[in-house]
Length: 375
Image (tube, rainbow, N blue to C red):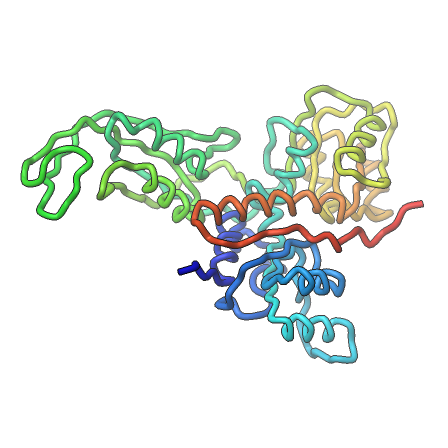
């Protein structure tokens, strides 16, 4: 029988990447509209949900829109069919299209908006600019036969375990001897039913955010040779270097004049134009960035020793303040600095569904565009 996937399955996968606890208090990430239990075959990814995206979703037979910006951002007092917002809601409901938003949680998440933007700009030695709510971490200890230790170790790291700061695939391994007695009805990887067995094993330990524990355990069990796998999960109280939060800092491979770096940003992000401020020949090496409207983070960028802040929606007075403080800026636009997440989110969700053998198609909106034109 064909597998049926509902919207809650998709939203859970999004939250593995971007846990809701990372969202800012003022935000409204999560389910916006529709029934999470409704069947989903096609998902459209967009920054915003507007009439163009709604028409596109209907034309492409989409059952769920995953947007970056919430459909409902401020308090709802009325839904009127003589107003554009009410018409949009009614059309989505009539078409049976659900809406789920991943906003500031996706901004802050590891491998979220800001990490993708930093990778696109080829920054190295990246760090969080403004740490957000700290994730709860767990320690995983699993016992593996020695001949499978490397495969399990690699799988844990690939699934997202073992991240400490800018280091991935961090584990500790210790050899030992495992014993077990296979009972009637078992099919042991090694040993015989009814006979006590001793096996050379490795105890692997690693650290992982609690939000991805399900994914990590699932991946581990898929490659572990034992019929019944022995593993432990321990809650951790120690503070972990934040890998989540707003904005990022990083280093360019080599210093560039500000004017050249601005041109490079424009080319990498495929922008028709951008605004920037600062001396054209100023050397830029350390870069701070924040996708969307991040001009308010310029004091953090200055404190981090950044030469320039790349963001969007820079206002006149913020620009004056930055220049007075000696901080250069590049305003690449709200849309321009956030659109990079859509292909990355599509690829992540498609990969997770392939791993789970879930028949869901993901597509990036082709109707979405920057609301601003340049001349």
